[in-house]
Length: 463
Length: 97
Image (cartoon, rainbow over all chains, first blue to last red; front, side):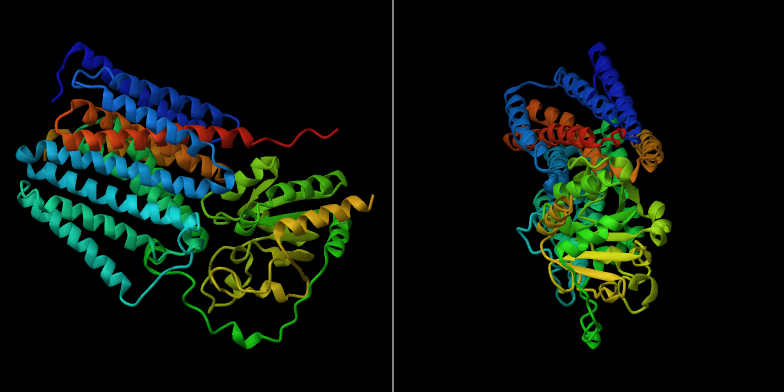
């Protein structure tokens, strides 16, 4: 298929330069200071590769290249301009697009070459198309849950895992039949269809709180399907880009799993939050202390060191800008304010950092869990905004808690804990949080945005 | 096993290790932009989609190729755009007066 013409050599060279730029791009991303170079490097590499491809002598028509490129840009620009709170669902959607592209190219490869595929090539295509297809539908379901078109609660039924695995086994069985005899073209769409169904089955049972892991895993699958496509097409640039994307998603999934003290299998097949319904009932009579915005403001005003712990609730309430105002007001009064970011706070890796950066909170005040946990005994006020499980001390002490063993922020060690929460309803995962009943905890009931805004007003009024 | 497969496997393994070493160093602060950037880089499958669409072999393959061009190119454009928007927001504390 490849002619060793001089032109082809130039094209190959362009791809090599693109690959080098992709690797540099990730290298530059390691620090916030050089990170924007990473984007520029990646853009130049991508433009070079796309530009070179347009000179490929195999192309006989351009209409169905140019029109889709224009449509792609037309769809991509608005998707690049979404609000920061919508980034998790946008990311899931882009995993779906990437996986769909890889799957569609694999499908086209099959139909072009059906008559003369070797068994080995058939195996590569089948695997690539199965992974691409299941990642496509799985990512769509994840995006739907994040956008709240679909319920975020895990949807489970008896024998679910067996049914799901049987579906996957059916897809793989069809793949094996096709490898034995690649010309059975009728089986190929069936295999694709079953893989698409499996993707839906895979993600539907997973709850919103597990999204950081799921979105990372889907990222990894999308990357590996692109790398496999590189094997199918014998394209090294795809192999490299896919391997980089796949390993990135894989590392993020491992980090997310560690941050929840869970295994991959547990996340994928263990539907979170279904475990415990009884445990919380027995302790109905525990005392909860609440406070008003005025009282909260005066406690914050008297503090020397305040740590704010943001969670998904801050994102839902769009409270990040009000939180920034609180940060500014307190900082102006000489209070040391830091932010404690748990790795799985929010719905995707790094979610809280992006929201707070959007609100202009300087990133050197955003602290990782391991860096700030030792400081809590010296903290006057820990202000928890829309975070729940990541502050739950039961994870350290209560062996019966479903989150036992999960690394958490030691907020209860600070002098005073204030928790902004809508009501005493247990969070999303339905896990009871003993933090709310501790002697040094004050509950601030209300909408995160409105409450923080009231505290800021009180602080301003005290001038 | 075909020779192409072996050479691709070498590339895959080496690129996987390079990726692992690079991504390990990315600060958790930037994990969201990391994901959107790798997404944009992964959208390089657009080059394969362009070839499938441009070869114009059957209506089915041209359609699949054209849709794949649109889907992957939207990832490329959108991925770089949003990554840059995010990275522009990360600022250090202003020096105190």
